[in-house]
Structures are given as structure tokens and as C-alpha cells.
Length: 407
Image: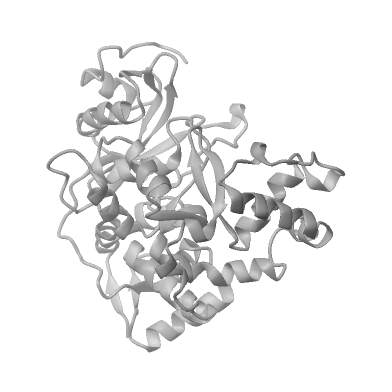
């Protein structure tokens, strides 16, 4: 019979695996701290929506506190320690992991990707080759192609053929992506992003790559169901389940039961069980703690949706809703927006979960809001009196600009 974990144990294991028990930086956050976070998460999801700040900057903040976001840009896009690939959606992963993703690029090259890109490669091979030749000459953005070829025909969508050709070359592993200011994609040969020592490593088989990626998923999550672990890198579901069974049989993962979970879970052998977790932070909607919504509900009884795609009249909490983590629980959510012109982080709504002490949450949250304001480039933050946590924040002196009655 498999071991059993209480839900409290599972929460602490998950938070420990994600780095929330690691010591806080004693001085200015530097690249060593960013490497530590990446070593815990194994990937950082990208998203272009900058309502508060682009999402890749938030997992670092959530685990380390205030830092200079340009440090991430330097590590990822100037020093090429990390590189972009399709993992959990578009993501940054350590450059040393590049061989583990060759299987997906091989599948794309064989036609297992967006139909429009496959048709472009089949119908316009000369143009695709010319685009690759231009990238080989120098890194470039779409607008710097000699001939962008505006779209022709409805099936191309709104992007030029040049943009689609670069997307195809990215998906099959010929080119990689760096970012210019404004999150603009700059395409370069993957050979110039991934070091030769990594590129020269033999490609693992698809089965070997899946097993290793599942182990990395388990290390990052600590404990999770099959769907949790497979979803972390968006692996094919049926083969993923077979690989998990193999990892259990080989003794690399342990199958366990978690209190209240319908399905078995898998425990990484290096997962620790902290006696307690002491933290207070705000999470991105795309943080691994909450990106799989049913896992957030199973672990923390926290029903969550970002609401950015919900019609305004049907929103419950607001447009860009971010969860609040205090110690071992998700205790609330904030509707946040950075007003870049006014240099103010606006708390447009603050809501507590049922049964939490709002005053305690507010006391723990106030310094976090100050740190977040600094990280997003704001001079201050402002709390609107909306939601059942707002008054408690205001009572804690939530910023000298705090106030306001309406949105």
C-alpha cells in the first residue's frame, strides 16, 4: 500500500519544492539568486500581457522580493543562460536542457504543429530558406526582413509570411529567440544561442526525454498527480502516463496518496517536508503554484481564474487578478494594474478568502505591495476601497497615496 500524505504535508512539500522555504537574499538580488529560482522551477512561463508586469518577472519577485527586472533580461537574453522554447506554453528554460526538447521540434518538422505553418513550409520552401539565410547573416526582427510578404489569403491570419516563416523555423529548432526592449522578438540561429557543448550532445530518445522532463516536473512540484506532472511541460498524455509508470517501477518516483485527492500522486525522492512555511507574496496568474487551476483547488481549496478573458459584466474580482500567498495558504486575491504614466501600482480590488484574518493578511501584505511597486517601476501604490480586504489594507497605512472610493 502506498504512503499517505495529509493535505497540509502536501502543501508544505509543494511550497518547499517551489523555493518558498529558501533563505531570503541578504543583499541585492543577483544572478545567483535567479539561478536558484530557475533551479527550483526548471522553467518560467512567458506571457506578453503587461497589465502589472510581464509575467516572466513575477516568479522571481514572488520568491526573492524586490529586484531589478533587467537582471532577468541579461541572464536570459544577453548571456544566453536560459533560452525560449515551447514547454509549459512559451517558456524560458535553462540552456543546458536544450537536448530534452529536440523531440518536440522533430515532431513539428514532421508536421505535428499548427497547420498553417506546415502549409507555409510545404508551399514556400524557397522563401523559408531565404528567411533562414537572412537570420544567418545577422539577428533580426520581423520588420527587418528584406521582404516580409504581407499575408495573402484568409488562412494566413493577420501575420505576414515573414512572421510565419520565422515561427516555423523556431518551432523546428533552426532559430531561437532573444528579446529586444518592448518584449520584441529578435530571431537568431539557435546555434548562436545554445552553446556548442550543449548542441553537440546526443539527442535523447523521445521516451528518455519524457522521463527526464517528468522527473524535473516532479522535482519542481514536489508531489503531484499524473496530470499535474504531465502538464508541467505539456507532454503527450498517454505516453506520459506510460513513462510515469516506468519511473515508479524503476524506483525514481514514489506513488503516494494525498488526503482528499481522487487520483494517486507521485512524490519526488528529494522532496522535503518543511515543518512550516513562512512567506508572504503575490503570485502571477502563470506561476506554477496556480497555473493548473484544479491543482490550486485540490491543494488550497482556491478556485481561481484570471478573468482577463471574462466579459466585464461577469467579472467577480476584476480584470487581472493575482493570488496572495501567506505562509501555507492562498488567502486572497488582488486586482492589480500598473499605471505607468502616473508611476503608480493600483490595487483596484482586494479580496480575502473565507475564514482568514484580514488584519493579519493586510499587515503581511503591505510591505509586499511596496516591494512590488518598486519592482514594476512605480513610485508608490494606491488602494481603492473595493473588496473585503481593502479596508484592512488602508488601516495598515497602505501607502501615502492610498484612498479613493471607486474605480
